[in-house]
Length: 252
Length: 252
DNA sequence: CTTTTATTATGTACTTTGTACACAACAAAC
DNA sequence: GTTTGTTGTGTACAAAGTACATAATAAAAG
Image 1 (cartoon, rainbow over the protein chains, first blue to last red):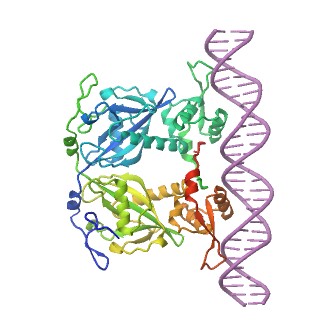
Image 2 (spheres, rainbow over the protein chains, first blue to last red; image 1 turned 180 degrees about the vertical axis):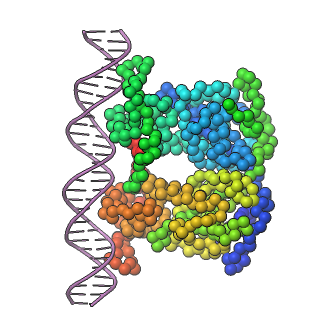
Image 3 (tube, helix red, strand yellow; image 1 turned 135 degrees about the vertical axis):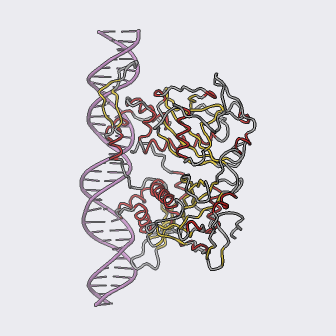
């Protein structure tokens, strides 16, 4: 019933369940199949009430004219998290940005150059706060809705990260990283509606956020809006960190 | 401000933002730093009202006498998910088990044999349903509470998967994979209390599960219990799949 | 066989949260 | 100044969560 092992950590064993210890760990690792690891960043932005992703044209002949994510091979002795930070910094000049590992993708045929496993990271940043200075490979913000036919398996990665985002903005206030420091409640609601793809009641949305009591009234108002300006708020991240809900109560 | 790139996807560019296409993707990948990828499975079980993990003694001299997770290198052309399934099958003989990717660990010094990135998988299975036939490397169920000083960074991996489990059993009925097919409500509550580390009100716990309306009364009762036997229930996974809550309403 | 003990099973009162819906105040545009 | 669109504040009701009590049942003890 159990398949034979051709390969792997586990060495031959003697009947009593004892183990022969491996002394030369290095040769063990050296004999592993050859492959490479990359990180790919799904960088979300929010502009004109639309969710966007930062993309470039592939520089591989095999994917000519296809859109791809920003990614890179991890370097010697570089942690995955650091590699993702580096990619983000190199491409956007931004640091201290919300960035989190989502999951790995390992399809054997996903890279034309050989076996490449990638770890997807999702990142959220305020488009208005950072003008793209680099335009290599047509780097630009691409609307998530009109996105298809990407290079590699990047469409699949984007889809997975989008689902991740939808879930996460409901559990954590990370969606606020997509907005400027000061924002109106309307902007906040637009963000949630766009990402979740739902319509929310304006009054209940307000009530919800006010009763959470993490919004700080800046005393300022919107400017240059073609209607009655709304109040501008900041999010009290410090208070949130202190008081975040540790919820019990089963919920499915 | 932007650091130089020594390595990576991105080729030299000409000033107008155009790109030189790379035709030989293979040589690109071949020049990547050498490393290996493993999967490590955190296999949870529930026994005597205690959460346990399936562990073995390390077979590496460097980690002599340390406990480690069940893991293996991924093979040529093998998906990560398949590798995790394989490890589970090889070690426990079980198939069709709940198993999900949690996250990757990439600390440069985590493996004495060289650079090894691992992808952690968490798995849940009913201890009683499967007697361990293999005892190589002292394979056994280890109580989660009395666990420290593991080989590699495996303690860190276990901790991350435990947090993942705590979160997931509240959002999905996957905790039921730790129990037999038929279970009493007391067993179910013990499971939740043990994993979450809380005490729950018995009456409200029942009400919660009954109003969800996913429990099927089997008509059978507990046997061999030293007190009044309780009813045995099954979980209606099919109904759950049809009706699972798509929750809106922001929640932090 | 009766009593004690532990556990199952069910219900009620109250609080908090979520949902549907209405109206007045304000600023800009005509 | 009137119209128009948006902001800002409630209110009434429904649903879900929480605290708490008591009866029924089976095993164990006497």
